[in-house]
Each structure stands twice: as structure tokens, then as C-alpha cells.
Amino acid sequence: MYIDASTVRNGEKSYTRYLLRESFRDGGKVKHRTIANLSKCSEQDIAAA
Image (cartoon, rainbow, N blue to C red):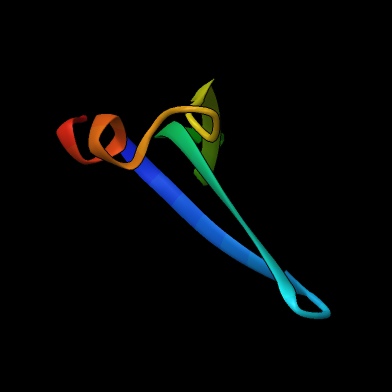
């Protein structure tokens, strides 16, 4: 499991999403499954995970 962070900029605003994800193989291909959306959590909670 890992935390996937992505930032998107729209004009002057920027939005960051944090997802708790896991990687797995399905038929020889690597896929990702989202376990939880952590975007509403505080920065300290995300750093602790």
C-alpha cells in the first residue's frame, strides 16, 4: 500500500488529492486499486499514514 498524491492546477488555484492505494497484478498487468480517499484529512494525518 502507498499514498498517491497528485496536484492539479486550474488557473491560479491548485487542488491536491491523496489516495490510499495498492498495486496488484491481473493477468500479467499491473493495476491499482483505491482503498480510501484521504483528501479531506489534514496534512498531519496524511504524513502519519
